[in-house]
View 1 (cartoon, rainbow, N blue to C red):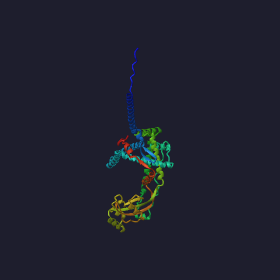
View 2: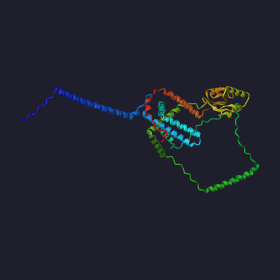
View 3: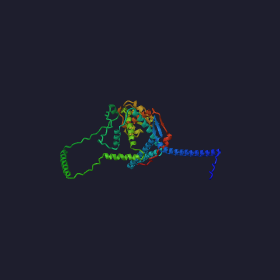
View 4: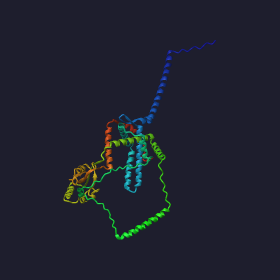
Length: 438
């Protein structure tokens, strides 16, 4: 009978060494797994940081409201696209008015300005971020005061921008403020001779009465003959314009949305842009509703010279009874009005330099000032009229914008506003590039 092999005895020392080796292998495996995991996490974070997290980073904070990178990037691309569109429009104007070298140079300068701005993405980005902050503050005010925009108002605005009026083209509103032209007083008539309107009077010769009658008869006969001829002629058919249907409007709108999709904006973004724009418009109209539309204005004329001695000489000549218009045409350096007596027309506050305005508003009608020094020289001023008149539309718009800007600055001061320059300057897009008009 065969003998069973004897069992090999393992010493405690050898057993301990085996356990240590197993433990080392286990630790190496765990360490390798940890290293691989860390590498994967770093890679994943890098990918996320350049995609999802990048778009979620805050670029600014207004109160408790955060402006995220995604929204900022879209608005910068939109701004750059609009700047390209403006440059293209200037280029079109340049081609249209290319016969004048001055016009060509002017439009070239405007295009170059846009190009210079777009060449520095941070310049465009800073403007966009400021506008976004302003919109947030205006939105806060609207929410506090119950100012809202309905879906119907957004739809109406879109249709209006596309020239589509399903309920009929609206009648244009009259933006001109009715105003009765003032009649010059006897004092003003004495100062400035009004130019009469000449109505030609047709003299009738009795001897020509018979011939005139004959001409009328002949003319009547000719007209009758022509009418008979025309009745036998086939009328020319004029093609009617293609009706702007809802389907055509929708096609144009879809093309518009598709074009915006090239810079990363979808239809939801477009509707939000319209909503923000309409909210801002309503707030603007509310804030500027009480801006005065009338003001006290002056009608004045002046003679401008270079030195005090010349101004005193002009004043002496006027005091000696010489005609104002003759002196103005002879010595005034203001070539824009010297040949019409230095007439400045009607103007209100802030239309003239401070020294001129201050002196003019102190005068009575007909009164002539002492020499008034401004950066342009020395003025002799005569007041021709003073009354409350409507403010011109361009000046009124400027007054409203100035008032609104001051209001907005005060409103922004109510909030803690933070801009994260280290974030937005690193992500501000440089596309679309200048010249990309698509």
